Length: 112
Length: 113
Image 1 (cartoon, rainbow over the protein chains, first blue to last red):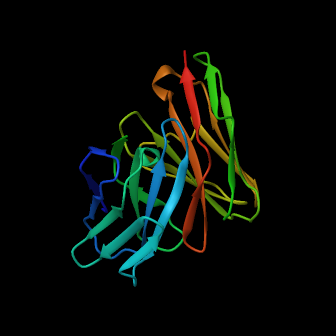
Image 2 (image 1 turned 30 degrees about the horizontal axis):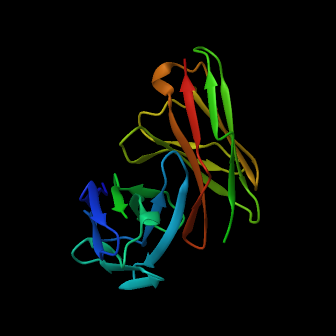
């Protein structure tokens, strides 16, 4: 059974710092991996999608990497801003068209 | 990107009553939709997979008679929480996928008093 773990559970940084969020999964036979942002009491916003054949994806200040063989993904946020404060969720898709399996998330707080 | 609209965004109901939550795909057709539940400080947990024109598939431990799912069209799935109890209070959120990319509704905060 696929399990997804995210560390740290919470992270506080001053504005401008670069940071890395970690995600690990137990079964490396995944179809894709997706990173989301969730603001308090809100739905999910998709940040980056990495297919199993890809090693990284970039969008603006965000870069996500995937090492399928070791069961790891990282989300790198450059030059953090207070508006980046949110919970970041990592989710794994085991097969095409199936539901995602989520980690518990990392709650990020960026202070100005 | 694709849009999934969920309604209502929050609801408060009395114990014993039923609540219906709607999930619509606004600009695409979704033969499959997923319903998740999220308790405070916890991860999103899949409750059931909603299939257009057929019965939903429920995850282990989710009562199908309590959480009724209807997926009558390619753009609408509904989740009805029947005879709600305080322990059903949670954040419910639906999702649909387009070419492997998952899109989520805004979520529904259910509070049962």
